[in-house]
Amino acid sequence: MLSRKLLIATSLIVAVSLFVVVANYSEKPYFRLQPMFRQGFSSHWMFSKQPYKGFKPHLGYVSIPKQEPLKLHCELCSIVSSSGQMLGQAAGVQIDRSPCIWRMNNAPTSGFEHDVGHRTTLRVVSHTSVPLLLQKPHYFFGQGNNTVYVVWGPLRNMRKDGKGIVYNMLRQAAVNYPQARIYVTTEDRMNYCDMIFKKETGKDRIQSGSYLSTGWFTLILAMDMCKEIHIYGMINDTYCKTEGIRKVPYHYYEPGSRDECSEYMLHESAPYGGHRFITEKAVFAKWAKTHEIKFFNPSWQFS
Image 1 (spheres, rainbow, N blue to C red):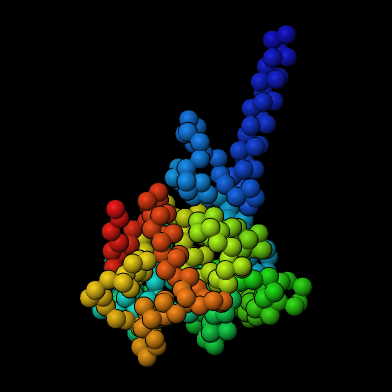
Image 2: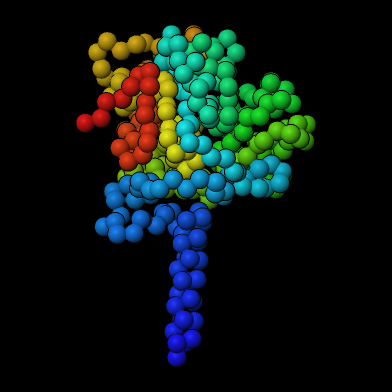
């Protein structure tokens, strides 16, 4: 009788353990188990505050060509915006002190080290920016560059059957530079990011004619990978309506481009194909209340 009870108890423990593993590592369902004794799910149910779980593989990002999951974790990640807000802030030394430094798309460091630093640990890249990287392939993928590249994009461009034009570019880059660390976002992960947008804004991304920004994909990945996040040069959702704001270029490395707030307003009001930068920033502010996220140059005030 005693041995039978022991067998039942052991079976239950194994079953619960397997359930926890599946719930925490699968892309679906899109939540993680809440800590025990917490009352229900919070309003931020998909990104509720939880103990940091380092060194688990990130299954939504796979390498080219081996299709292995991304394995990278940091106590502190500094995300450097491509915004013109970075200019004149002399934040380079502070940024370079961070153990992990993230950049986006083809934002350069050369010539801007004083303001943006010079090291890069990980670079999140839009499918539309891949051709820009390939204009300088040796700089981005050449020997001695230990940067991890995470490329996101829709299935039509990232499919692996020979018809994905961007995936084909990346696969050739991996052939030309076999030491390059290139990862692509899986279709499940792309759907996951769409789902978060709908859950947080109440709007279906496709039906509302919205394109998610590289910043959106970057912050979602960072919240999985980083215990603490510092973001440099990102404005909040009310900045452009504030008096006395700095008028800066949309990108710090494109001085003649449209100013940042004009670009934000143009995209926010576009009926189709616009990045909802202002909407996204409002969501980021919400996430910052439940995560270790801090904003610098400019700093964000929370009520």
